[in-house]
Image (cartoon, rainbow, N blue to C red):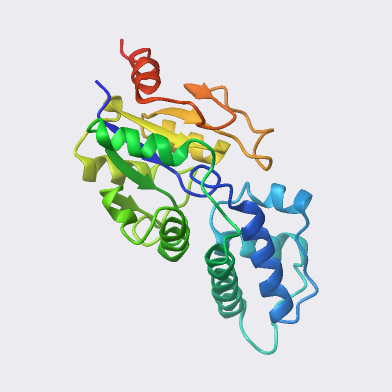
Length: 238
């Protein structure tokens, strides 16, 4: 029987990646770097989970000759860029640049009323999560999600299943009684690696990913009901 829904954040609860890309570029400008991530490049970089990891990958793969910026070490510069990017993203969210995807809020509300546990399993930062959900749901957003696992608690990024395994442990439920919601191939691999049946809602950045292992692939959650989820979940029961 279905007992819990576990949601990714970026791309799943909200289509955040355009704002993230803009925030990265703003950070580059603030630091005086001539870097610019256009949509095509950013789509490729999304194969690397985690903001700092994405920055490091870009640095080493595209500009291996760059070692220092203004005398700062690579690690320190990456940290500084990520801090600037996080601040820029939070400001954009607070200004209303990002909203929940269609059907998300209604399904969360309906699931809560149906007695299902709701959890978040993401490798984004707590600051990003709070900024998004505070603006979209309200200051009491934690009342919807009893458990939140994020970059502060799961050090190993997706596609590793660590964040989902920790979420299941805190829920004290087996994977067979839960559904995961993701938008990317890395997220799907992480969820299925923890034994979770997974509903995928791709974005423009992830539409070309391989989702053959998903339980369902939907354009968004508009019109999806708890009864739908229960019926789909029943198909996974031997």
